[in-house]
Every structure is written in C-alpha cells, then in structure tokens.
Image 1 (cartoon, rainbow, N blue to C red):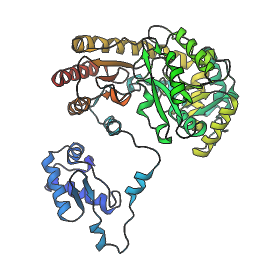
Image 2: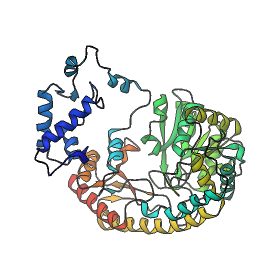
Image 3: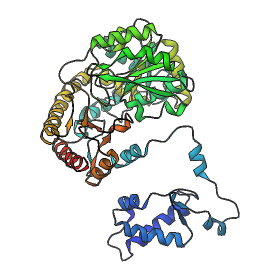
Image 4: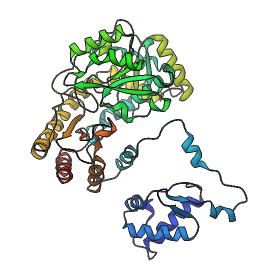
Length: 479
C-alpha cells in the first residue's frame, strides 16, 4: 500500500490513505468484519506519522466504513453495506477463525512481513544470503535443459526416478543406504513434516522433540491437535535418558530431532549420543523423524553419520532438503523411510499438490548427480565460516558482559542467552524500529525468555556487526 502514496501530490497524505483503505473495503479485499491493522502498524506501512493515520481513520469512521471498539481494534463495519445491498454481507472473518490450521504467532507473522523490507538487517533469517546463492551455476544447469530430455508434465507419485536415484547416491555418501523406491521427493522439508502429520499420526498424538526446537515455531503438528513435549538438550544434543519417563507419562508416539547443527541452538549431537538414541527408541518402539537440513553445512569438520546410517529396522524417517544449501526457491527436499510409509506419504502428496515441480526436480538431480553440489558446498562452507567467525567476534566485542553463547561447528545459528531477564517482545519491537530483525527465543521455547536465535547466514558481515551492536545496546537498556 505504501507504493501508492504520492508524496508530491497536493492531496494531503491522510486523504490518500483514506482513499486507499476505502478502495480495499469497496473492492471486498477488506470485507465487513475485517480487523484492520493497528494505527501504529499502518503508520509503519505507510511510513507516516501516526497522527496522519489517525486523521484518515477518523474520516473513515465518520463515514460509517469503520468502527472501533475498546480492546477489539478497528473493524470494517456492516453499516455501510445496508445502503448498497439488501443481502447481509458474507462474514469471511468467521471462516478465517474456523480454519483447522492454527495461524502463526503474531511475532512470526511480523518477521515474515519485515524480511522483505529493504534496509532491514536480518539477524534471524534461516537462509543463505543472496550473495551466497549459486546464480551462475544454476543458470548453467537450466541452460543445459535444452540438450536433454526434460519433462514438463506431472511426475510419478514418489517423484522423478532420476532425482530419486541421485538422492540415493547422495545419501550413500553420508552412510545412509537406501533405494530410490524408499525415497519421496517433496517441496521442501516443511512439506515432509506436513505429510507425516496428516498421514501417519492420529489426533492428540504425543510428539517428543528438543527443547528449544524449531518445531515449536511451527503449527504443523499443533493444528492436528498433537501435543509437543520437550526433552532437555546439553552440549552433546538431545538427552535420550529422558525418553523412558516421557514415554511412560505421555505415551509418546514419535520423536522429532535435528541432530546436526540444531535449530535454534546450533548444537551437534555426539556419535555416542546418536547410538544411544537409536538404542532407546528401538527398545520403546518410538519412531524418529530425523531432520538433516543442516548436516552438509559443517564448518570445522564433518558431523557424525546421520541417525539413519545406524538404522537397521526402518524406524527412522530421514528428511533432507536443498533449501539450506543450494536455493530456498528450488523447493526440493526428500524423505527416506520404509516403502509402505513412503507410499502412504506419496499418495497424500498426490492428493494435495500432484507432485513437486518437474523442472525443480530435474535441476536438483543435475546438482546432485554431476558433482556440482559438492563443489558448491566447499565454497559455501568457507564463506559461512567467515561469517560465523565475524559474528562471534562481534558478540565478544559487544555482548561478552551481558550474554553467553556457544561456538557452533556448522549450520546457521548461534543461541545467545542474556545474563538477566529482559522483555523479549520489547527488544524485538525496539530493534525493529532500528531496522534490525531478530528471532526471540520464545518462538522455540516459551520459557526461553532470555534468549535469541542469531543467524550469520544472511546478513552481510558489516550488517552482522552493526546489528549485533544495536541489539546489545538495546538489551543493556532493557536489563
């Protein structure tokens, strides 16, 4: 909406804002009952003083288009429609509230919006910087499509055979022996979790995971009324010694873990801990989802083999993706597991999107099969290590007296915990006003009220230093 303001026009800004909102109402983009953004939010969107927005809202309220209620915000009113139609307007708000999938937290929604604002220093973004994405190599890969047989139609339910063969060879190099028949191609690791949630688990299932965990920031499982229970994490990763008690108390149905360069803590599960986790999960018939999104992004040395490499009974569903290593826009990931499970998930995938993009699958296969992927990883590891070390230097320079953290040996993240309590929501808001975007720890654990997840993969080195300095200054004020 901000792009529609003409700051050189003779028409006052508040009247332009009034007209923009009025058009959204008249066109049905904001139907009756819609709660519009707060005045503070609208001021941010339009980049004007709040008084300018207030003037526009007052005019729209006087015209009967809006009404405000204490504690309920400002909504589009039904009154104005009475003169336009004898039929009561459709109440889309009730439909929105009735959807079975829970909305993101307001903080995550705000993060998703702000990540696309120019000039924002993104200290929480879990993806590679545009500077690190392989544009030239991708262009060469796609250019080669003209000389080879390329399908632009639908693929078979499990995904293109060529790409599944390439994934199987890739996994073999990681110590995971599986056949293309036991692999499903998905549109990123997140879709794998969605398919598992609706295809393998019943409502109100109990899911164990690390605490903190990326899974708490999603509502994939919660929307199916499933219950998440956290297992403590130490320097060696998730502690499987807690599983028997959790199994007894909650009747755990599944365990989700990120053993290599955990999101959000950056920790790495030791090999002994991995073997112990396999042993205990087998003893208690507890299936495991292993999310290995970051396993290829080691910086100081390769991690231990994936859990799936120790799996002799088919009790682990292994999830991988190219989103963190090659391109988030490619939207290609995979699940490896027992054939009956893969066939079940493939059937559900066909019902939901009829298969991942054939063009993306072809490109993914070329990356994995031609040696290009390993070459790219070698380059990315070097550049990520430089960024990680720069972030650690900035933390030492600005946060040593107020926080603690650990040096991650791979992945994207540093888990920063402040010495004293501070209002994370306020820190988030104040940092945002200074064009610095952070991820509060409470997104990953409601009790992590003194932590933030810092990502060194996206912001430039100069922005990392500036952003960390800014957050440190704000944290000192709040503590």
